[in-house]
Image 1: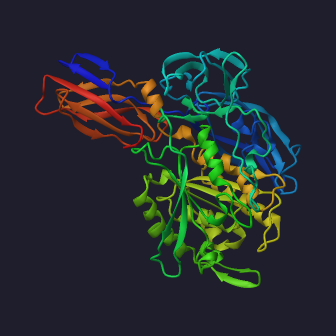
Image 2: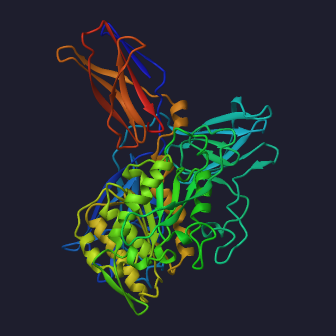
Image 3: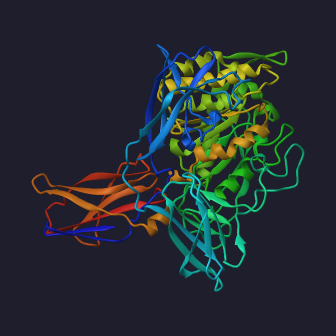
Length: 605
């Protein structure tokens, strides 16, 4: 984008090297709304906010966001809702005991239904969905519906816009399918009964405790439809991309590295890395990283306790435009490496008895091993994004406790935390410290089943109440449901890998939402606007208005000709997109004309 100002009077905007755009869901941007109601609902009951929209539980009391109790029976909480939209909702009370929580009729209305209208946000450069499709069909049709707003199935013919990868293939495009941010379900066909459906979920021969089909997809049957909330995307060979992919992107692949230890008492061990599709072609792209604990059970086929199936689920969710391309790393616990899992995961200063043996926590040392040895190994050998917002960790049971502890202790290194069935009962001292802390810049996904127990603690109520205590603590300090906090309960689910596997698609969608990164394709198809707002020769400054973009490297360039440019870096954008003003010092001595251009790199460079 070049803004050309001649003789301080005439401004001309020309498309050039700085196009931009981003895609995010449900009206693209969410606004946090405060909810409050005064109600004495009795001991053991909680107040929730229920509505038909997915962000209010989609009509299910089990998914309705909860509020936190405060003095005077005032229930308060924040919920992130799509911008510029009116919602109808109802306060309800629910018995939150683990035996009662799964009952969908366990809901009592409080007062009458109400409505709220969220603040608006600047519109994206597009108004509706845009789909690019590479196909050998002569004139493909797309059959689609808007899942977010309950739209009916609609069919439209796509238009050819260019050649494909081979002579028999063409590139097709269609716009205007559904509102920006909505979830789109769709399938292609050729008009003569031949359909291009989404690929089937992963299916490998069962091994040991690992199922043939990952747990989240076991209920599904053919034919399969595509489903994504991306606004601007390409469909190629059954996969969805937010950039124009190579003709044959490299497949996801595993690598294993032995990571030595510089930390006393923490032995070295191998880690397994899953690199995403296209890693070999997208050489300028850097990737977010998720570090999983109890790594023996994370990737297929897992171990004797079962498998999370994180690798197969991540491949499928990424291919369907529901998860960012990311690097997944599994760190095995110390049981197989002359160490001890409980000591490594238990916060330092805590002691527990497990199987008639006392264990003293040494999590601080294990945390140091991750920070000083594991993460530098990844950052040196792979194209990682190293900022906290693109660094995540996840674990279950004691690994879930450790994940929460790691994020709490290192919020400048980790920005996203997956906390599955955490064993909070094992660390009362640390839990008290966590609950007394102020709000941290973390996105937390918390899951707990209602029928959980383990060898160390047989009471499901202890597990459930520990998760509920954390949920309330985070609500009270200002975390917003569907914004930087997500809680999911598992009705009658127990403490096992299959239950955690079933939640991985939701975890990945929350922590690695593909709408929360810059979209190179949208940058190409929907160029930006850039305007000169003011010019003050007295102080030697110009104000240039531009659209800031989350995840993109941004700079204003200035020159008095089209060959030499000075550069002023712009602050990292905090919204998905936003109109911003940049104050730019004028060149000295004052030339007769100025040129400005906006540089926005979708890979964040």
